[in-house]
Length: 333
Image 1 (cartoon, one colour):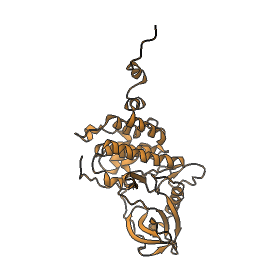
Image 2: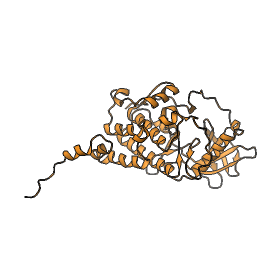
Image 3: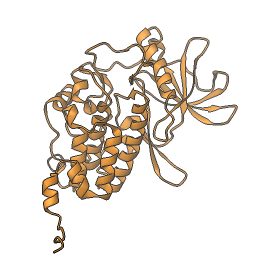
Image 4: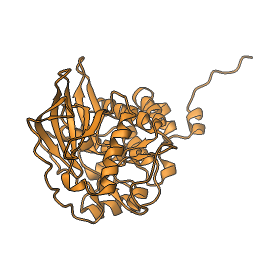
């Protein structure tokens, strides 16, 4: 198992456009916001805003405080997207999803979102090489549970990637991956509201972008399953399926099937059923993927506990051939 491989983080980008370094948010460390949250220290920044560690002075609960970049306050679309993230994430209450606790703005209109604090490393940070089979299954099962919950609430993430998964530890020592950052999520259903990206606008991270998403076509919840397939391929091989510029990777996702792990990572042993499973998650044709996160969970349980049944479910062995291999007793005289 490789212990020191470290790939660069993947930029969230509009395809083919170089990211612009955002202007800093107002300095907040040491201030009390929304009359109860003390801003303790800055944790990081992204395309839409900065994230701080904070404390609820009334309950002493540790929280994360997300702040929209100051220069985006005058962009109605970005402001609406930030507020929609709060609305969307507030619908979620699940161990494998980071939820919203509060939302508001300061006197100078600084937009704030108070979230549950996920304090572990990111999935990116722990994926320093191929992971063990059982660990992969545990992590992917948890992520599928989180996605199933979000999808049932009508929410599609659209930018699932290792940087957007924080791996916490439970009190009994379990790894608990938690999906974060619903900033460019899509709400479906009657209360989904106005679409905040125009037709043909491509937003996301090319390495994890499903073909239909990269082409600007209509999407559904299966773009998240595709992204999870790419993540799983990395867990298995220690490498992403494709390398190159953002545009080259997006075009490869559209036009090419992922190379076999044996070709991408020579010498790395991979459970063939797990590789087949990952490839079904990231099938280029939408109809060839699992229909839902729940269905993907059912098949992963078979991969873990009943490989012959999993092989049938994944199409590796047809039912007729499977039945021909079963030794049946002779009929009674």
